[in-house]
Length: 208
Image (cartoon, one colour):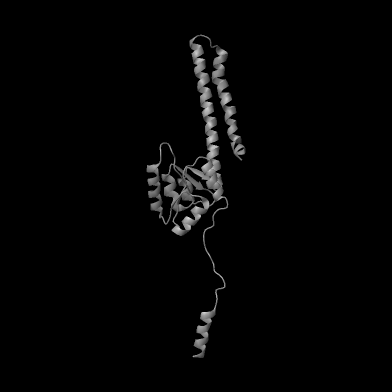
C-alpha cells in the first residue's frame, strides 16, 4: 500500500521538463520572395498544401499569401488548379511551384510549372516547364525578370529587322535602294540583331 501511494504522489507532483515540436521550417527568403513576386506583377498568390489548416493559415499569414487551401490530396490540388484556370482573366497565366512527387500532376496541368531542382523529385522536374537549380524561392521572381528582359530583346530584334527590310523594299519599289542598302538590310541587320542578342548574357548581372 505504501509503494502504491508513493507512486501516486509522484505522478501527481512530477512536472514537465520540456517538449519537442516537429514541424517544417519556412525557407529563409520565403517572405521576401512573395514580396518580390508581387513587385514583378503577380496579382494573386495561392498556397495549395496537404498540411493541417491551422499550420497552413499560420504560414500563409506570416508570408503574406493571399489565399490558402489546406488538407489537400494530390488529386485535390489538381482540381483546385483546374478551378483557378477557369476563373483566371484574359491572358493571365497560372504558375505552380512545387518540388514533391505529388506535385507532378499539378506542375504539368498549370500554364507554367516551376520545379525546385536541388530538393525536387525527378517526377516534378520532368513535369515542370522551368527547373530552378536552387531551392531559394526568391529566384522565382528573378527568373520572371530575366525572361521579361530577354523577351524585350527578342522583340527589339524582330521589330528592327522588319522595319529595315520593309523600308528597303519600299525604297527598292521607287528605285532608290541600291546594292549596298540591300546588303545592309540582309547581312547588316543580322549582325545588329546578334550584337543586341548578346545582351541576354548580361541580363542576370543587370537584375542582380
